[in-house]
Length: 504
Length: 108
Image (cartoon, rainbow over all chains, first blue to last red; front, side, top):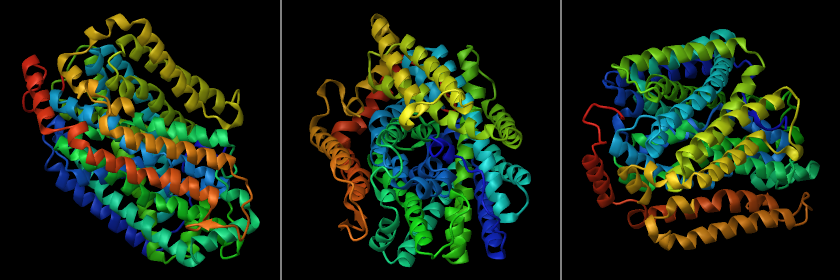
């Protein structure tokens, strides 16, 4: 499984320090700062800071959601993975054709209506409201916080790598400069700055992705020519599973399909939509947006394979070099500059979203779990935002290879702890508080145990099955079994407004 | 997905057809990818630039559902998913039970 989750972590890029790339990079950061100043003037309450006052329009929310759902992996690590394992790497992104509409049916309406009824701020808020349980809310918050630390550290490292590649300042300084800019807009404008920066960043990512894809087709003489070049030397690359086993590919499909329902950076955004009726077009727009952004993932993966095969490009020193090498050897420099800014955009938008979610957990969910409320949630939110960003930067700088493990652990943890209690629980009246607490605890413990065993090379599953998939299945089983055993308590654990929302 | 799309006791209504259709497309697509012979080579038949099994995967499983399910979601949205009347009912129940926060307050 070396070619699986570990490849999601961006750890290296070549230096591309050239005047055009530096100029585009500076222009990119200038726009980010301008949007942040604008948003900071409009952030007055905790609701503004954490859920943009429930006032974001459909297009902005969709583009922002695409932007935060796609990290730098889609631009660099993903094409590198595709170059290595062939078409099997597509099983990470193929579920997107179903997951967005599944998320809309399963979560979007119910979470947005919970926001309407109760003014909820966070994902654990929804779990607390569903089961009338501060304990379930608190446990979900703890599990998310553990995952966020890992996710934030990997994103901080990715930002450092990209900034170092563009400006040549060193990865350490890259981490602090990138996190400093992300922190500045997170702390001043909260999620409002994050959303509008995400809109800009998402448009940049989509534009860069389309242009690179078209360029690959042009240089390769069309997709048919590219396929024939690859088939002549390595037919397995274009087989349906690439170089992976069918079981490993389907394990990817399951984890990235079901697991998407538990990714807080996407789920949290359902609260923010101004008019719940605008959800009508949300899945279609988001899926189309994701397809555009992921064109680069597919195009660079197959394009570089063909270009290396026919000698248009030299062989790569490492899979991660697929995108940078293609950009620097085949495409115009301005396009390379746009893509490098796009990679920075992808990592910063994801980091911002997690900083905001982490701050909301610390200043809102954990006090609620202990029956307390903070007086000034906005000020506390800003202070905690600062602490989380600095912690993430320190972890990224000091944890070495451990940082990759933390990112892998984070993704699987969100899936195994949130999918049963939140995604199933909001749609099944038979779910109980005990079932939710037991499944969150199971997801937390099993994910930690299996991922740690895998990291320490003590144990791994055969045929490429992922630890995250096993943890998710176990967490679901525990959720159903404990809910079935404690079924008598189910009806009394649902408030009338929540029951109505679940029935609609 | 069926749980999420179901509305009270009315089930999934007119969404049965797109759900069945997509289930069939995914099941047939995966079965074909497993069952068809792995004889791809230079000069093999291509569908929209890709060998047959890869085309089934990318276009059939990856792109085709994109055109069906989100459109079905949008077409049935007001009858099957959410209407203005639903939102008003939720607001009313939240007011009656006292869970709705006043302006400027956050979740309770």
